[in-house]
Length: 162
Image (cartoon, rainbow, N blue to C red; front, top):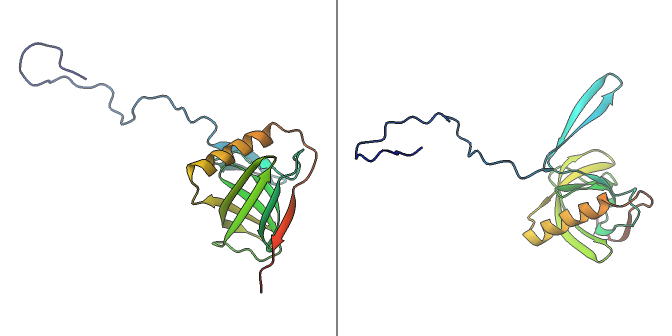
């Protein structure tokens, strides 16, 4: 709102747009995903994720990975995190290193466990630099475009003393 008259008095116009937003269009399309899932026969739930997840176990090309001995497999992956199968050793708050390879693309990242059951755990990527974040985005785009066929496998794990 600007004063368009030529005198030197104070602008007394009022701005009709009283909200605080910037009126810029939203350009971050696809960042949040809503998915309805059946929790029980008569119970529906909305699954709100920041990034779309892709089933890594049904991907045509194998995603090989390395992690500590507590991680058995990666179930699904997104730009923001992974779902891991484990041997009842992962707990909420644990941080595990994960190194993934998909074709020529290699990604090393730390995963912080945010939910865990006896056999599955959900983790989010932490301490990502921009290059690694871009690789994860690229990986999710590659996986999205692949037909379903093969499974994910852990090519090598390092043993951890109990």
